[in-house]
Amino acid sequence: MTFTTLRPKEPLKYLKWWDVVVLSLIMFGRFIQDSMMAYINLDNTATAELPEFTSAVNWAAFWGQVPLLLLAFLYLWWRRFDFSSWPIKINLKSILWGILLFIGVAIIFDLYFMVAYSIFPPEEALSQFSEAVQYTTSTMHPFIEKLQSIDLSLVIYSLLNGFYEEIFFLGMCLSVESQHRKPIFFYSLIVRYAFHTYQGNISALAIGFMLGTIYYLLYTRMKEKNLFPFFWAHAISDMLGVGLLSYFLF
Image (cartoon, rainbow, N blue to C red; front, side, top):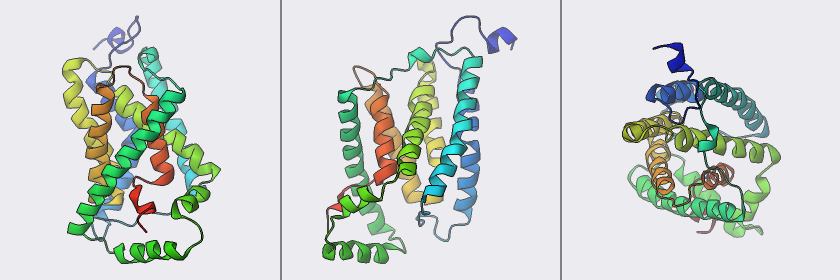
């Protein structure tokens, strides 16, 4: 492999499979390691109680991801990757599509978790049910209460994280030649699963394989490609959670 191969003279339209591996290690290597260590220590590998995302945690996560994103983009710049090959258009239509995408995926996730938790009931299910019942005596609707709990740190981090993850999975992973797309797609599902294992297998499998497949199929079938709705839908799910029906069932 020559230096010209690594840093071509002309803009690079397609990434190599090993580019995707390198980028995945840069962007997710540490998170996969931390998630797997947390997974090993879970009392119940099927489910896990999610950590509390405070303002301090959000800012720490934000500043932890920014250098890695810059490093990944520096690598792509060094490889002379053609960034213009990523269609990103922010307009009213793409904003609305992102909201609809979030709603559709959230309902699918709700149905998935209803079935999964009926088979593998989490230990905290009773306490979650009690909290849901308490909403019925509250003067504030749970969805409004959730919206009011969103602070600036969560908004900023969610917007970054939505871009961070989907620019890799839909941007970088699909910037390979057509004959490499399927194996890279399956690799991307494993990566997406691997750094969500700290949430337990039920959530990690849904986020890694179900969400990953839904996003891939929808994006590849778009007549007018646009990555922004996927960034935006992912960001909304980070702010509100991956479910939606639970806000309105009680």
